[in-house]
Amino acid sequence: MTSNAGARRFRRGYIRVKKIFLTGLCFLIFAFSSCQGKNADSANGGEAGGNAVNSDGLIVVGFSQVGAESDWRMANTKSMRETFTEAKGYRLIFRDAQQKQENQIAAIRSFISQKVTYIVLAPVTEDGWDTVLKEAKDAGIPVIVVDRMIKTQDNSLYTCWIGADFRKEGGTAVAWMEKNFGTDRRLIIAHLQGSLGSSAQIGRTEGLQAGIDKNIGWRVAVRDSGDFTQVKGKEVTERILKQYERIDVLYCENDNMAFGAIEAMDAARWTYGVNGATTIISFDATRAGLEATLEGKINYNVECNPLHGPRVEEIIRQMERGEIPSKLAYVDEIAFDAKTITRADIDARSY
Ligand code: GZL
Image 1: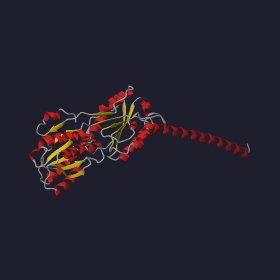
Image 2: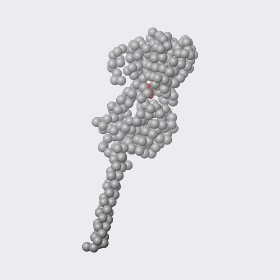
Image 3: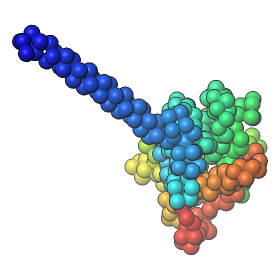
Image 4: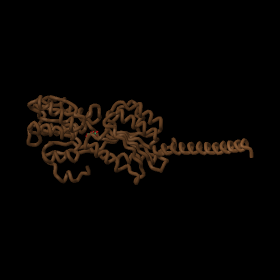
């Protein structure tokens, strides 16, 4: 065989081997990329563009939680996590918004893109939800609002709401104040508000304001927000103690701000509680809040029950049965007086 013919045969063989190699390489690249794409989709809980609920027969619940700002919030999150487990037929996608509405809106949009079965929203504030809830409605995903309320002109944007009657909670505190201070004496009140614009703050403030409007001797010397946190509750109280000689009632819109206020009062050697100059009223009745009530540091503590997990599950079960849940559902709540609370009262509670 001449060297030219041999060279030609070698070239033809080389080109054939090269073609086979390149075809195989293209196939491998295509197979890997489509597999990767599928894995990415299944990581989001479904087939490529498929419905998350179908991936493994679980009901997928996207829960946008306010944050982790208080003992109440932690108990609320625990209740939801303990309820929506795979053993009970759910996949819970939990998002903590660090008390920022923009994070909740982003979470809801991610739930929509993952095609969850239900969206549960604990809204940080009442306003600003219409746009994103319209997107959820257009995607055919029911929205259950829990804890605080949303304000909207279009009630079709959410299926239902379950939570506390915050104004009633404030009214309960005012009734106790009337009983213990009378209605015709001068009362100097310092008011620690929760996160401004949240239903809990709006309702508890309205409850107090109704008492002030009714009892002419009552006066709010100072009103400031501690954002439902212990750190800010302490900061606000430190400022108050520097400005005022006398505070008859410190009205704290949650336990964690009351704990911060107690820290500030201790540091300033300011007396409070059942044996002190300043009466402390608080809300939530968390375990730590009730311990402080039992110790006489908090005079009166109005419960706000955080155990919404089973309540939300009941709503979902109703909807799975094709039933329509009540649009609004209020939870029953009680209150605790430092003068009558017992250890048994606290031990009987699950949070
Ligand atoms: C009340 C809830 C409030 C609690 C606070 O339902 O929204 O938010 O009172 C919590 O402790 O931060």
